[in-house]
Length: 171
Image 1 (cartoon, rainbow, N blue to C red):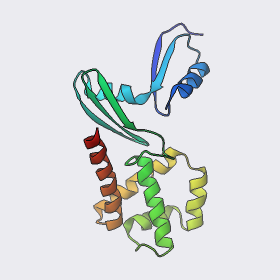
Image 2 (tube, helix red, strand yellow):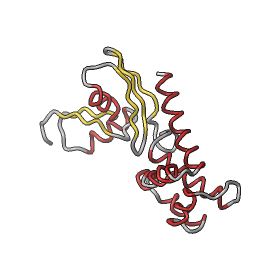
Image 3 (cartoon, one colour):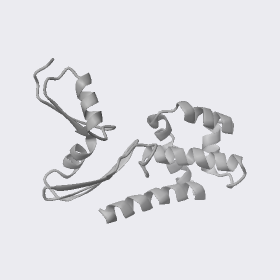
Image 4 (cartoon, one colour):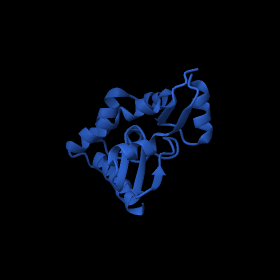
């Protein structure tokens, strides 16, 4: 074991059990393990008060006032992470399935998804094995389709934006 005192703020650590599991897996004698959220807020704000929307593969929100830190979200892609890259990619896949079912009109986003996954069965097969990063890699398709004036892609981005605004306002 290395006797180097260490701090690790890691995405995916959502509680003490995760922190203990990670700490036991590392060759460190003295390690403090926690979620990446406090470190992200600290890195973004420095010594200032303010709010942070941490948007990547996942998502979370933080508000710091003085020594008080309030966090929201970040519960993982299966339960939360709205407005994240994963969420955007999943919404694109859902929309493509709705188009295949003829419940939504085709557009730039469904066409882009169909180029990668020609059949609904291909989408379902992908979703069974895809990690969060694999699904998040589809997020640029949504942004590109919205730039091409695809109403469905614009609705997805608007829903994400609404979530960001409402969460930061609630904090």
